[in-house]
Amino acid sequence: MFARILTMLTATVFALSAQAQALTDADEIIAKADQASYYAGADGRSEVRMIITDAQGRQQRRQFTVLRRDVGDTGDQQFLVVFSQPSDVRNTVFLVEKHVDRDDDRWLYLPGLDLVKRISAGDKRTSFVGAHYFYEDVSGRRPSDDTHELVEASDEFYVLRHEPKDPQSVEFSSYVTWIDRQTFLPMKIEYTNPAGDIYRRVEVFEVAEFGGHPTVTTSRVSDLLTGGKTDMQFRYIKYDVGLPDSVFTERSLRTPPRDWLKRPAE
Image 1 (cartoon, one colour):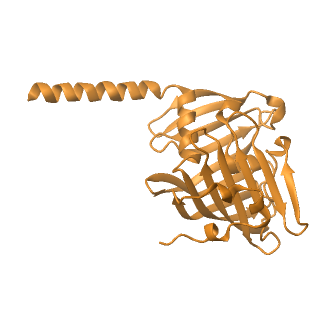
Image 2 (tube, helix red, strand yellow):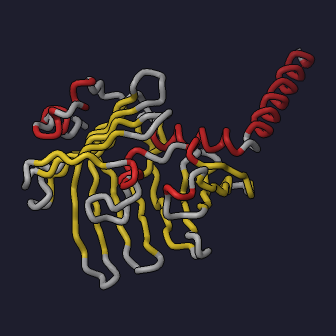
Image 3 (cartoon, one colour):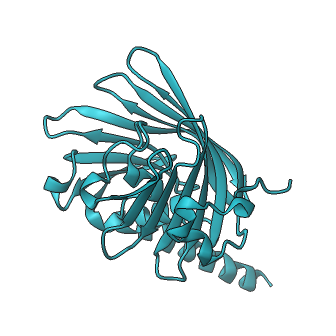
C-alpha cells in the first residue's frame, strides 16, 4: 500500500515538474493566454457598457452586445457586435471573420448612411467607434504576428515581452504582458512606441467565472500621452449558447438576429 502511494506521489511530482518546465516556453504561455482570452466555450455572448473619457474629462457612453462563435477546430472565429445605445449609434453593427492564417475580414454597418464599410487590414489598429480600444482588440491579435520572450515568472504573473514581426504594420515597437499564472488571462499590457515611450496601457480590474471559464468583467484602456481612457464592463455573460452560423453573415449587418441578442434567462 505504501509503495503504491509513493509511486502515485512520484508520478504526480514528475507531472507537475513537466508542466512547470513547459510553462517556461513563451510561445506556449501566449498560446494558453490566447485560448483563455478568446476561446472560452464553443461560443458565447455578453453585453458591454463602454465609457469613453477624453483628456478634458468629457464622457461618451456606448452599449452593445457581442456574439462569438468558433469555427470548428481551426482556430477561426466569427464575431458580431450590435450597438443598442445611445441613439446616434443604435443599430450600428460590426462583423468579424477571424482567421489564424491570414488577415481578418471586418465590416461595419452605419445605419444613418445605410452603408456597409469594409475595414481594411491597415485600419485594424485604429479607434473602434471613437473608443481607445482598436478594431483588432475585439477579436484579438494573432500570436503569430509577434515574437514572444519570457522575461519574468513571479508567483502571480508570467511577464512576456513581444515585438511585431512586421514593424511597419503597427504603431508600437514592443509591448509587455502580465499574464495571471492561474487563469492565463492577461491582466495588464503596456505598449511602447518607437520613441521608447509607454503610450498605451490595457488593464483588467475584475474577473469572474462563468460556466467554469474565468472571464474579464471590467477593463480599461488608457492613452498615456493624451490622458484619455475607455472603461468596459461586461455583463450577462454566457457560453455554449448554440449560436448558428447564420448569425454571422452579411445579412446580419442590416438585420441583426434579435432572438440571439436577447438577454439569457438567469
